[in-house]
Image 1 (cartoon, rainbow, N blue to C red):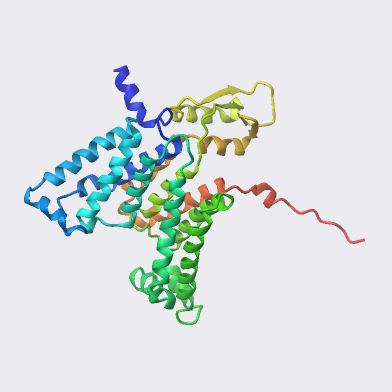
Image 2 (cartoon, helix red, strand yellow):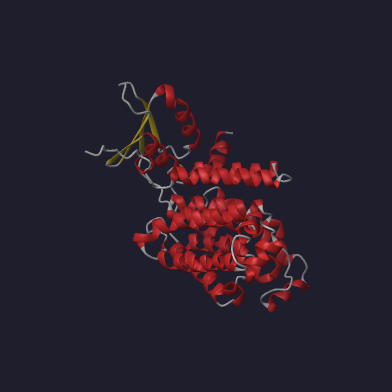
Length: 372
């Protein structure tokens, strides 16, 4: 029983493998996302394949289908429970790509991006930074922008107007479009989308602008989600999870001092999430002014700065967010407006809280002076 419990807990452990912790976290979440969207059951025998030669498998019904499902299931199990994670991730990605090549109806950008990220994770290691993900994101946005640049309906605004105005009947767009001359708002939104995606493709390549670009991606897509209430399948979730590859999780021990009265709940919360045992918590018995202090390598952080650092370096915090999102989706499946409002509010709160801006300084009251 103890061995079984230890093995099950490996689902929530991210240290000690041949992957960086953040990359392994990304892989597990992408895999869980694909499973939640029924990817396992969507695997089938070839149906209108991209490669006509794959039709030969239809001569032997269910051989292709069951073989891929077995391989996908075994490799998914291995990845989730930290068994040869690089190989398992590579196999999972290849199975999804092969499934897409075998059936055109399975091709969606969000499925393809997940598969590519899993393959690149399998090709990465725990020694070098995940440069391959930089190239992947750059290609994704470069391809998206070029595709729009070559489409006349994007330059004329017709695509945006038909999508938001006719297909989606989006209330904010319909209201705001009345304040502009005909098609001006549609053109403006189209140009913003095209040039934003092209800029992301460029700036993500440079180390100095990468962190800012990652935050810009999050804000950009959250804004789109807020305006359209549309997730584009699970593209939004896939993208956010892929960005975890850029959140370098420290391997060093986190030494945390907390005020017992105000931060004791935090200690209990993180002790549940810290399955890798990287945090040590000690009570503050000296009556210091802070409620949380973090000592990490050569830096000391206090209060919310410390809390944000601990959260971003606790992989199971992101696993918890994923679980909350899934539970909300299930509970509010027939109440989409409520679900959208809760999602939007929650995401914007998270962005505002974690955005690397010192809000206290930003909104600090400016001193006034009397004229002499």
